[in-house]
Each structure stands twice: as structure tokens, then as C-alpha cells.
Image (cartoon, rainbow, N blue to C red; front, side, top):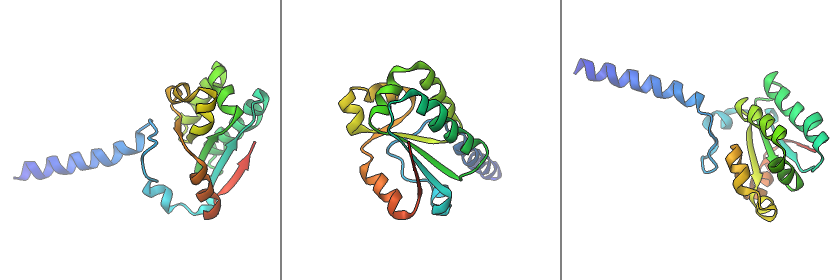
Length: 151
């Protein structure tokens, strides 16, 4: 009996620590408890719509990555919407940078309506981006008082 309790405690502690290191994003996962504890004024949603490569590299990606790296925000979501989805699907350098952004802990989502229109939904999912209909979620972000930055 004593060994069963010890094994249970070890497994439980291991499970708690391992959940903090999961890289894959899950489009069906509910908002995490940690995210719910973060004040809305510490949450940022970056809406990237521009099909301009320089905007992606010199503004969107640079700001998003550094905001996470230097902890300017506690919770960052990057939303790929419109022409940016097509650009990202075609540009290997942007895809590599996106891997770095996702690895940093930024949640990256793309509007399924847009990605379907461009025919790039599967490509963006392969990169590790959550592809889903995003209009309602963006509306919720705005209503809850999350900070919104658009490019």
C-alpha cells in the first residue's frame, strides 16, 4: 500500500510538471486555467492581416517574439488573418520564424474562413498553427478588454 501511494504521488507530480512543457497547440482545448487567472490588461491579441513581407518581419514577428521574450505581456495570441495567411504559406523564412514564435509560447491561430479561401489551411496546420473560425473568439477578446494590436 505504501508503494502505491508513493507511485501515485510521483506520477501526479510528473504529470503536473510535464503539462507546462507541451509544445503542440490544440484548437479544441478550452482556455487554460493559467490564462483565466491573468488580468485582461495583461493579455494581447495581435491581428496580422498584411500580405507585406516586410511588415511580417520588421513589425509583427519582431514585436510578438520580443514581447514574449522580455515578458511585456503575460498572454499573447497571434491571429493570422487574410492575406497574411497566403504569404506565410509560401515563405519558408517566415515559416521558420513562426516556429520560433510558437516555441516561445505564443499561441498562433489562423482564420479558417480566410485560409480555406486561399487554399492554405492544411499548410498552416502543418506549420503548427491552430486553424479555426476566429470571428467569435476575436469578438470575445475585444469585449473582455484584451489589448488588440493590428498590422
